[in-house]
Image (tube, rainbow, N blue to C red; front, side):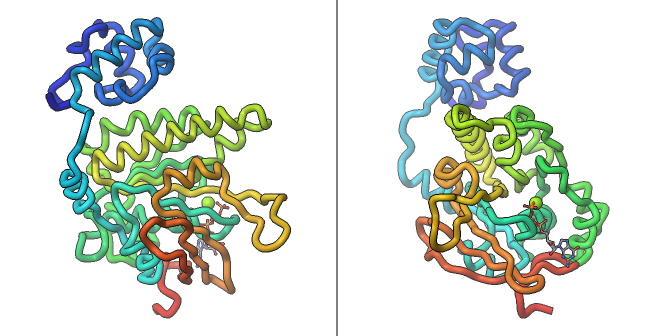
Length: 318
Ligand code: GTP
Ligand code: MG
């Protein structure tokens, strides 16, 4: 049975009240229940753990989540699309632009260009495919209050897009804390097709988590939550063939004595989920250096690009 045909009420153990509760917190799809733990479900639906375990078992029984043949995976991967960054050099570094069905992360010091790239991609996703876009809209989850409609207008004009239309195709959500940020992502599922979303931006993924989970004792919990958050993003990327672009802050690693002590926040948890990880740093004037880190099928190399009034460009481009 395909998951589309099953309503929450069809699952043994889920009554109308529990179904309502689950939908309220964004669990519209039985698959979302199949992949969480009984204790998580118990907390979310405000039911006992025994009942939660029974529901999960029933969902797994109904859903065909067992095995996928490799040709299906290949078929899905072949549908992956690319969004241009505005710089050919940076696109090449990523193997052709920012990829759908994947999470692309940039990390770097302040002013390194993470937010500028977020704006540029939100414009570029709207371009037709022959110009490096997907002809789709963007969701922009702003965690630092740095989204700038004026920047969108400048970048849209430079790309020959009508600025008003470009602004209308970017759905901005201001996330006030980590919990809110996760809630927004969980809620997105219902909106993606209706709003024709091809890109989800989160700028930055770690700032709230870092501020809210301070002491050492809270590190494990922070990483678990981040893990779950990234899982949710990857599921959206796969299910809707969309691109996810996240930015990340850096911190100094005191154990590094020689070389660059800059490390991304969230360490291996983020590294594990981000298919493409780019370290950005400033060079002279408006030039930025992008280094691809740990990409499985691409060489670890560096390119340069420029941030101009019109947006992101190649260094030698006018
Ligand atoms: P944090 O969020 O502070 O960690 O930094 P970030 O990596 O997000 O930096 P961001 O992308 O905001 O880059 C800021 C830099 O982009 C500025 O220092 C400028 O060099 C450049 N920039 C931003 N807006 C403009 C603009 O309108 N014109 C030009 N020419 N450059 C701009
Ligand atoms: Mg920023």
